[in-house]
Image (cartoon, rainbow, N blue to C red; front, side, top):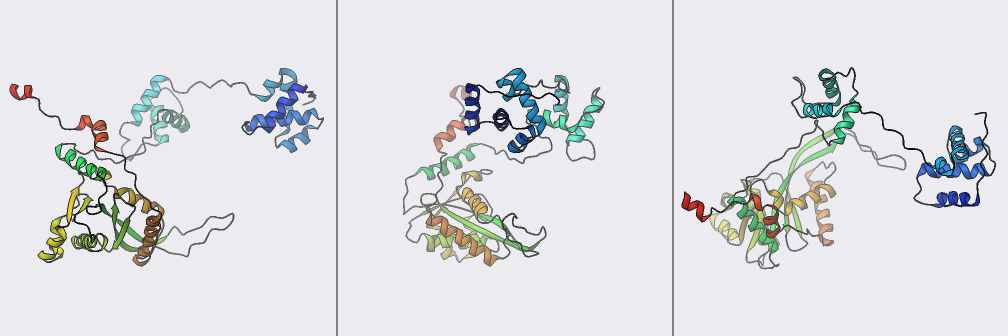
Length: 378
């Protein structure tokens, strides 16, 4: 760096650099180069400019050099660098995809980047191939062979459609206080205690908990959600037996909706969710009294997403239960506080899926009516 470059700015160039320095959307690299040129035009040394702007002296030198030799635009903006030649040819990338989508080698549960790189070396003429090259090619194709996602495809038949449209029609009805629609479900919870006392957060340090924990058993949370008003109620029990379900239905009739003529309950197909459960728990007269004021509406199998209460359980899990709770007493207390706050805030679920939208989106899956011509031909 024996050559010294002197930066002399015209009035127009100085104004342009000052506008860049004042702009809130200027890229950091361009801003620093503008600051370097403005400071250099004032006669400051390279060392002083580097300390002032927060860059190395070599950056100051190169910026001044490009300004003197190539002009302002070249000093501010880098030339587009040529992209390096891709390591894998098109047919080799296709081979990589096919390999990643195939079964992993014997003794391995899944493909890893290094396994794929080694396999490509074996299958092609490349002597070496880095796992980073494999990662980039797979990322371009949005392919992650080491991940698995569980899914379940329901059988969309006449029964599925009938149950789906029945539930959706309930949600679409005008609110009727004498015939409320209540969604019902349950979720199990682990009671987890701390092996050591957690350390609270403080400035510069996050809260800390021990990786070890104590399992104190399990509990169950029954959830009720009114489809037409901002009300939900959670009941914590030890189990989710037929007796527990029956007690929930009695609470619904006698405590939560004592003035309703008929309570339409939306629920899934769990074996305990049945009228028979009430006869197992109560005397026949009591079971019949409760059932005369309840009307069950079941979601299709493998379609619990149609039950509005699933959304509320997810909200409860994220807002209230995403932590370690060590006892049933504390679980009841925390859920009651969350429930009271959410009811007081008037929180509701804005259900958008209707029968019309179901027929538009799932029309092809609906059972087809056999035409008259087909019947005659048969």
